[in-house]
Image 1 (spheres, rainbow, N blue to C red):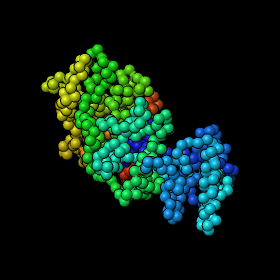
Image 2 (image 1 turned 180 degrees about the horizontal axis):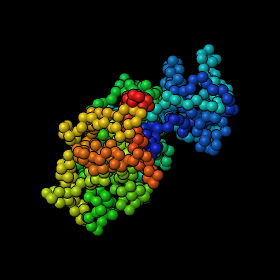
Image 3 (image 1 turned 90 degrees about the vertical axis):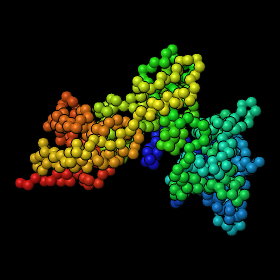
Image 4 (image 1 turned 180 degrees about the vertical axis):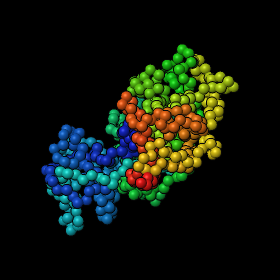
Amino acid sequence: MQGFEMMVKKRIQRIVMGTLAAGLVILAGSFTVMAVASKEVPEDKGGADLILIGSLKQFGALERPAVPFYHDRHTEALAGENKDCTACHQITDDKMSIKFKRKEDVTKNAGMDIYHNECIGCHAQMRKDGKKAGPETCGQCHIQDSPAAKAWQAIELDKSLHYRHVMANDKKCEFCHHEYNENSKKLFYAKGKEGACLYCHKHESEQNRVSNRIASHMACLDCHRLKSARNIDSGPLQCAGCHDPKQQALIKVIADVPRMEREQPSIVMVKNFRKDEMPSTQHDYMERAPFDHKAHEAYNQSCRICHHADLKACAECHTINGHKDGNLVKLSQAMHKKDSAISCVGCHNLRKEQTECAGCHHSIPESKTIASKNSCRTCHIKAGPDTPAAPDRTSSVAPEEEQTAAYAMEMLSGREPVRETVALDDIPEKVKIKKLADQYEPVELPHRKIVLKLVELTKDSNLAGYFHGEPMTLCQGCHHNSPASLKPPQCGSCHGRSSEALNLTRPGLMAAYHQQCIECHDQMKLEKPASRDCTACHAKRKK
């Protein structure tokens, strides 16, 4: 599932800005710039510890280029002088300010003075003591073409890393999770309401809450620093420890992470209205969908994959008619938008881009397949005659959660994934494609081998099993526009010898064969045919 997770993450990053430590300039909000620009470019193009000091932009357009600052290099240099974080950062009540030589923001001129006096002063003193030191002139700091931190990579507190922190802190969630009390102006722990940091700490700082970038570094570094000082095993203190790809690869991953303990439901019926949107009747256009919440937790690395804004039910923000809390995105759109990684249909479509699925799903549009016309019923399960009546959702008293969960479980229990295809004897071993044979010999297609390979690739996928629906659905990857049948029509029944001028979506027979076969091979990354040499499939006909 790693490839799928990466695809989802890339889509999510376009929608929800930032991750646990999002942004290239990890501490830039506390820094300033100064002096004359130069076109000097350092030979070193930067690593995961590169910070661009340039927060004077809060006072208007920058007059000078931002200053590239290598944090880990300075940390190592200070360690050689028997100095630690306090050489640059002030600490009060075990809380370290990530701002340089100050706790709060200052004026433009005051900020410039701090950097000029402290940075240049330190470099000058070290050089005076006969030690290697950093630049002292304007042009050496403010370079025109600042290097880019090519080695920097965002880090996310996925469920493995989260679980390790939970265990390291003896399941005391209050060490990290908190809410803000408007009356007392203090943080407090609200048990049972723990959510992702990004739910409150956004990409940019707001009133009473700093950005996720700043909050992450304040909380994580303080904890790591204090544990390290007490000789307790802790997380990294240097930038590279979290943001260097090679260092990230060394982070221990828990293979089987226990389910998070937050009293979340295992199986539910998907809500489709808010409490203040009580419908006049419980009859909808489509049956509500039972949802296996526990299974979907195992498929994803973070609750934010689905609960992108908070942990409430989707219908609390995305209502039937659209609500300002959900940016007027209706519930039907939130669930069915095909190109959104945080909708049900969009997430399923991402899964189709995986190698083992893309051979069929990339080549043929979903709307062209017979199976797609029945896919709604895979989620919106129609109750059978023996299924107990659904809880009354129009009652002034909400149905008991246990009653609703029991109904959802009953609905899901009748749905069985399809793991196999038709009997082996019903699958032709080979199919000879000879209708267009001219310069080349007919193609002998290893038909049974292909079918069995597709079964092997998809049999362990519940998503494929539920949505394929019947044993012959896999056949429709190639026989895409005809009902599932043991003897489907030949390709030439629809595709003529040449393309139809009045139907540009229906290529000629030769084009259809090549498009279908070659695209499938490309999407599934098959070794054969190894090139576009026709003889990889066709033996050249002897004269």
